[in-house]
Image 1 (cartoon, rainbow, N blue to C red):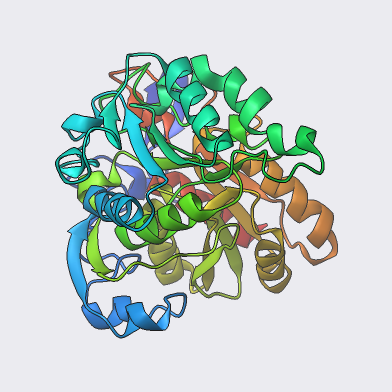
Image 2: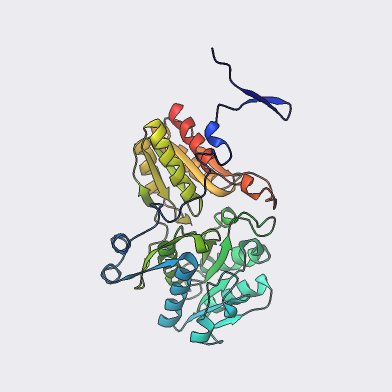
Length: 390
């Protein structure tokens, strides 16, 4: 009998050989850097990008440019400003291009009356956006970091979200067309006030839509849909992807429907539901799991976090019988809790294993240990293994 190697850690004996795949580089097999140049979640050729069935005919018959995430945001903003005189763009340092360069050169092209800086006041930014939207404008307000949005939370919840409901039959009184953009999530060195993912806080409020794209092509289409939509939209842009995610994006303007999930990969044994940056970790984890366990995993991108596509998720889980929800934000009262509860209610008799949540820990993000707070490939891989062996 071969005895397992033991190691004393924190007063306890741990088996080192039980999860050898979770070791640190150079021997690590799972937690290696994401290769954005090869991931199937991005369009690496023009042909693949133009084959997207959600594109209108004009876009499918057009050309593409290989651009990164923030450039796709810039392209969408430029088109919105160019095609609709009601669109205005503002926020802290927006006229200078913004911290992440998403509004670069827009003030030069469209003038300081339509693209302009604001004082350092989130209440002022959102309050102005609500008033402009109520008067028929299409304001795009930028919050410099999602971590800074909380001073304006009252205005978003008690004004933007409720104005249409309390207006009754006065159909012109609403905040449709108002988009509040904000960089969100961790990048590995943000810490306490530059790493938060507060999307779940907004998903409790009727009248609001919460969107988080995973790629440049998705960002362009979803942002243009958000600007044209009749509801106010929280548009959350994962900071990690601004420069890392590069793909072919159709040059023509196009929209992608809100509140419609996308099946990125079909499978028959297990469903993974996620959105934003963690989708790339899910892809890496399922590739390893399919090889090791000879299984077939379905991957779904929610895209719109609220109101989310319940029917698409439940249809998948009824087929596979197993479900894992992955997100970067804290696990407590998060998006995963809502998805898990809905799946349990709608798919109970089809479930072969409990619904699992792989998410950020319920703690503040420390600067030195930020990466340990978030889901990684190993945790997702372990969840797949647990579900399959249940």
